Length: 449
Image 1 (tube, helix red, strand yellow):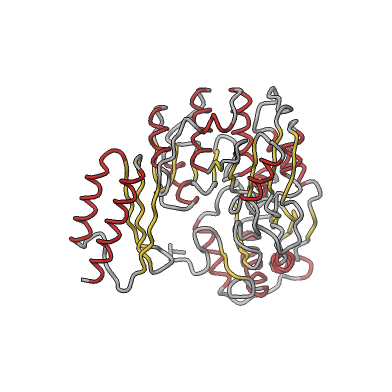
Image 2 (cartoon, rainbow, N blue to C red):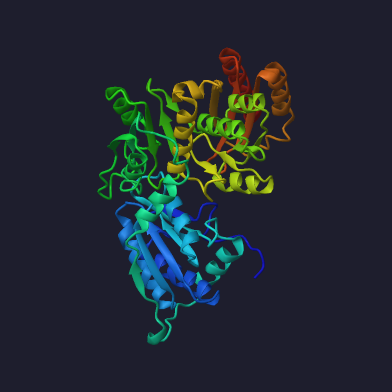
């Protein structure tokens, strides 16, 4: 089959609102069958299915299982499991594919599906295209004697807990650390507290009472206010906030200051560099703070910028043989430890550096100074090509000249909304604000002209 634009799969699987196409029970039944047909053609084996804690996961787990069974493929059900845990188990159990039922950091009324390959990485485009081919074909059922069977994997959580603990040296003693862990009422609720307590830390857990509706609700990596308050109230050393499916991490230091993905990546990069374990460049995105780029440069580490999205970060890491990358939102990829973004693994790497150096998280992040960043969204009333518009480009050049080496700008059209985004950041906040406003005004004038 030729490379064609995909109809259902986006950059991160299939995602949407529950009950609206394609996130419906009948579509998931068909998707399970289509995936089953593709992997049945790949030879004998089984498919893993895991989910986060949102209420619709039960419905979609059953629909996928029925579709896979009808296609003659065995299904091994993991139950609630972090996305990176499903990637790990797909690889170590040698499954044909791992299917994740999750909408990550989105609210409970959204859900989504994504697939992992047997290597624990994103499914190749050609397999996604084959699945789409079958989705649009009539559904059939194999002979009864060849129907797939389903079973639950009872020790899935324990396997992943041991894997996470193994990502830091056993010689490290974490018994002096008091930490608060916010599980976002999501897929890490029964895993993260065990990981951190079993390596010796004193653990206070919040956001670990999922009811199907409270995933990511005023908790977790996208809403860390409750974590900040709990860290300060308990005089904890650090706070760890994961998102609903466990692939994002935001931390809080003992002063209650939020430590974002850029700062955490910087800490891990410095740790790897000093241990002689750093390989390749760090890969960030167009939104990665300039302060991180300058901080890494002082360490002799290059930063490459990919388009926004962990898929693009991963592609660039593989292209340049890098081991570390991610986004300021907290999606952190440590390829020397695992195959995908993993909030628990990333947190452990930061804790290991705290133990190795005897420094607090507050001290570790001070090696990198985050620069002020101003983002202005301009509603577009008509189509305008910002890259060829002379007036806008003259303004861009003027702002770049004014900023010099102390800052940078990013001007781009939104891919999802009718907006033009103006982002300026730099060392001097007043200059950054002035430059952002000037550029935004010039973009508006160009639209009105």
